[in-house]
Image 1 (cartoon, one colour):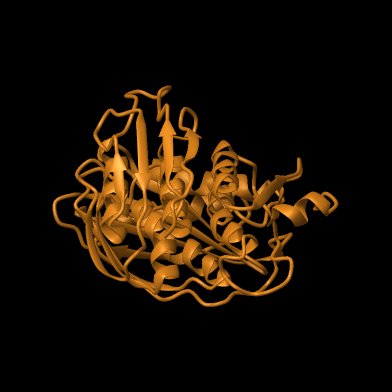
Image 2 (tube, rainbow, N blue to C red; image 1 turned 180 degrees about the vertical axis):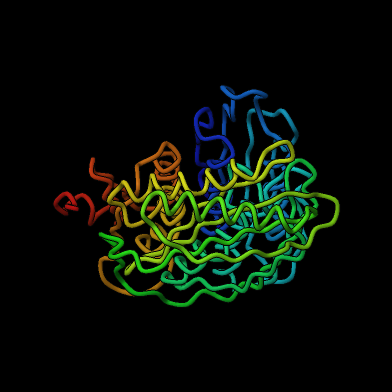
Length: 362
């Protein structure tokens, strides 16, 4: 790997998301980066233990080297080395998101030839993809870009203890289609409510399920329901997941039962999120719209093989700050352009093609 110019990034707005995206891209492109002002506007500021775990994970799979890798640091640098396929076991700590670390290292490992990634930490946490979203929504979507894996939940981990474990066997990436377009979600075909509990009485899961079904019926939507138990060690909690299958896409919405919360709140949170999505014209929910930018940018940059213009176009529930931050770091590492219209149409294209193409229409 030749010497690369260090990419300078402003971390004052992006927080952990910007760091994780930069680590993934650095591992894939071989380009080092320096991130200044990391979370300076957050409380507490600087690098947190869950972000440190991502840095250590990137080092583990590549032999790369980081600077400023300590809790509280507001400046971090990372210089990658080639990713090594193989089995890895990584620890997030009690309240760190295992799902986010898995997503951070998933693409570099797949492009390097695959591997087995086991992550211990939180699997069902606020502000991160819960395990069912990872397996039922995110993974089937990234398969369209040639990325595949089999996922297994060993133990569920809830806040604040964590103590969960997920395992993914990551396949080598394969050449995807040259163009992906999802302008609309199409007709709603099926809604399924799944209610889980771990370390709690089974009647809590049944109550969550009944409440979610009732709340959906009030909106004129009829759904199937199932209740399941989650394996846990020392943490406990509940999850309500509303899975909606449309003609062209799928979407998922999570409600978490916190230790001091009530089943009504978990059920209502999932149903409300689904309701907000249904009120929008987007093909992808706001979280998937953000997360799908990464493989779309790899395709546009020619990192996934194939010929042609390698453009992805899709509509999102809403253009979030996370999506804009993600677009900014992708454009810093790759020769791509991410465009967003006021109607929620996103286009990810090669930088040269984007400069010549007319604005996308919904």
